Length: 586
Image (tube, rainbow, N blue to C red; front, side, top):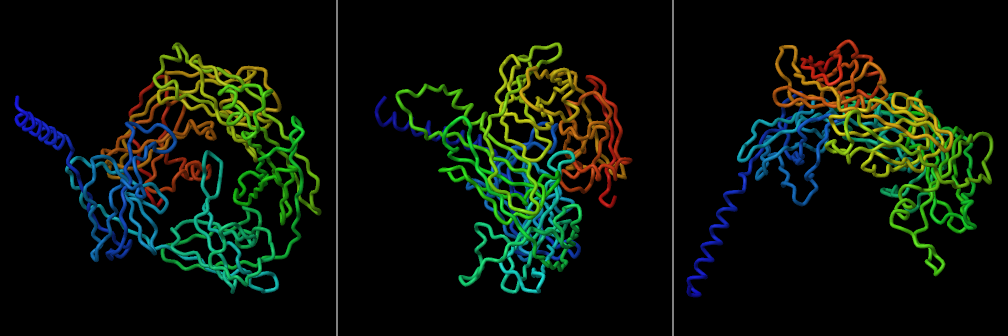
């Protein structure tokens, strides 16, 4: 073959490869729709429409939908967002086949996910086939609300530079309330603040006169730092149980003023020591938080010790019951000398991750400063355990390597604890455990359930348990592959299937066990599947509109108790049932 013939054949071959690659590329799709003002149908121009690609699992069987994010709107490889025209119309082009979440946002309105039925509720994932154009995707944006007011002292003087925070109550696990900051503003020279474009919902307001890093926006060079006042919740209390809930409706403009009363504040000073060495710990973080359960986590303070002497200090602390905790980082920069003992990678990992020294103390701030407090650092102890599966070898379980065990602290100041990987024979170790009350958490593959867990003969799976010191016994955990399954269909009052709704399975007993609360999102035909169910009595709830994780709130469940679909699950049972949608107005 001549050189020219060889080159010609090569070109033909490359062209064939390019054509083949083009043929193998799936056709791209598009999504188009409209954005309107809720209630009036007025088109909204200038709204930004973004998509987030998600990898949907075959089935949803844990608390909350499990979706792996492929890319988000901020990803440089994400599709370019669309902007609505004068008629509120938008078009998203060149989308790869797959599953997407779509969001619409416009200044002055609450951001909305497609399919979202209430503010802060869950949206619906849409699936786009190759070459498909998904039409008539409609968003109905709700105008945001406003809260404004003035912060003054008890003499009527405006307080400048106070931070006003908008807080939303949420449940991170059954019965465990927390509060998320949904917005914030600083008071100006007249003591005035304004929180705007608030998503409609129920909120708390908190004011804190103490400055924080990054709060200099809008401040004057001539401004004097405000006198410290204790944090206060609207209308004027430090107790979360006595605080008023502010209901923000669409487009409303609410007023909320604060009067901060003078109160004596105190100082907490002390030292962190490490009894095992002659010098203070080099890097130690000290945290101060409320001792009462269900308190506002952002009342907390944190500082670091002076590395030369281990001293720490908190100033302007209001009276109350607090939990003080210190966590020491290992000294990874310590010099290596000829006498230094060699350290294995496993030992180093254990020191860095699994065995961080800590100190804890309950303190009562009342009447005077606390001085010369000493926090001796100690290492936690280990609880050895073993996982086994009834009638099967653990290694034969699909996904057995994903099984892991951890302890969740039931009280304040829970120490961070990372689970070590479990060995192939099921042996594991819970390290860096300190005295306290805990809930055992066992994460297992979808088709297994935790049948029993005992420590020194005591049941530790259904109840909180107390650890008061080193444990000599073995934590025995028994799993079973005889889990039940529910195949359900969700229908409305007209017996029509309802897609995109979260079905929530709640046990009749042990409702504070997060692993017994399972969810699944209905598909386009209203069907859902829940797997890995332990034998027992349950209820299935499916709300048309509910805030995310609101079912963790015991009061919410009590309101809808009679509307749940009761079901009994035997060992290895597969139950088919129909569930009625709970309408939004109920």
